Image (cartoon, rainbow, N blue to C red; front, side, top):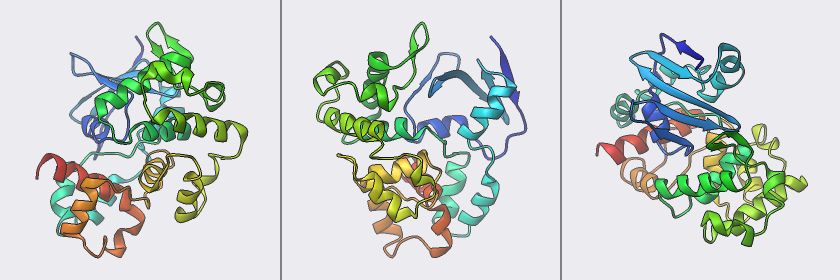
Amino acid sequence: MKSIYIENLKCFNLARTLLCGQCFRFNLLEDNRYEIIAGNKKIFAKQIDDTLILEGTDRTEFDQFWHDYFDFGRDYEKLDALLCTDKVLSIASPYAKGIHILKQEPFETLCSFIISQNNNIPRIKGIISRLCELCGEKIDDDTYAFPTADKLAKLTVDDLAPIRSGFRAKYLVDAANKVSSGEIDLSLPYTMPLDEAREYLKQIKGVGDKVADCVLLFAYGRFDSFPKDVWIKRIMAENYPDGLPEKFEDVAGIAQQYLFHYFRNEV
């Protein structure tokens, strides 16, 4: 299998990036490699110190897709230096160091976080896997791409019964229909003001503030987006009752990830 080595990485930790709750199409294999599926591509990734080994891809595909997917073009050292100027984040940042915000495909991210509502990660991964098997294009013998909005829009709630998504099925159908018809244009939130982009996505049934903010952060790279779940609301109430300092406004999303990772796993 073809492979490439990405060397001398700074501020990147593969495991923390995958396990922080921002993506769901990955599996840890026995040899400490991760199988990662994004869109219609699949690779195997393993990190040894500051070197990332990617199997199943080549340099051209890496430059065209995986480089941006892993957000390697952003200066995370600079972000860490800024976050460490805060008392609480100066503790959380070293613990969470290496988390990158992945740049995922918007429709896949939208559907994934619709599925994530009131759910746990193993079950989320199972529903997404069954959805891809049901109507996604085949990548190889046992792997399927995430379905397009056009393909998913052809299905009904009853058609989605095999994926066992419960009440979320009607939201998936609504999202697919609105995107496929053009009622929702997923290219627009890249440039919309944050509040406007959030409200735009909330036109889809089942999408509230938290899901919309997750999509804006994890698909659109909107680092000014700050998803709030129960954990984050508790962390903010205890440590930032007046909100994050204004100097973190443009990097609130990565601050959120660092705080979530630290308080959930260490505190």
